[in-house]
Amino acid sequence: MTKLCQHRDALLDRVAAHLVDRPYEHLCFSRIAEECDVSLWALRYNFGNADRLFRAMASHLIDKVVAQAPVAPPKGPASVMEALLRHARALAGLMESEDYRRLAYFVLRNGGHHSWLETAYEERMTAKLCADIEEAVLCAGERRGETILMRSGAAHSLFKSLETSIVLARLLPARGVVGPDEREDIVIRATRQAFASTYIFDWAVSSAA
Image 1 (tube, one colour):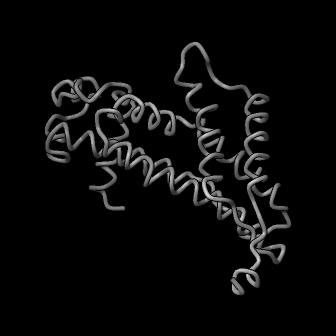
Image 2: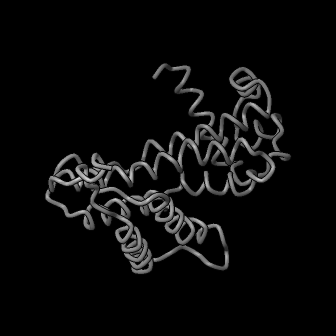
């Protein structure tokens, strides 16, 4: 990564830490510079205007979450259920991170007024994390010499179940943070439902059809 990119990312980290909870309408370059203790010139040089900064911050937050996403283990004797459970636990851990909280709140606060933000959230992050869930199941099946798939929408249901119970709970003051035992119960329930939607794909039957 070049020094320019590092400097730009550092600016976005600083701005996000201060302003991610603010709606778009409250973004003002001079106020951002003052509240985040950064140079107004640096903001204008790197982003041009508040709208570009807003979009850059969204992209930056999505990239940070995706970079931390759990991936399917390349080897190991885990069963499909165990592999799915391990992946769901890792995904739940990611959802408890500050980066994920910032992104979720950012989208929740601004997505209704900016369709491109919700689209980016779904296409660049949600779709990627759901594909990783399906890959974890596929890899576990391959270690058993079988092709195991998930029914359409099952990975998305698992993802949204975890996100609703873990992430949104953090954004509701009356709800509070989910404790370790409750999180484990949430993960197990969601994983069992997802496992029930897995099936062995028979290549012979498919070819005959």
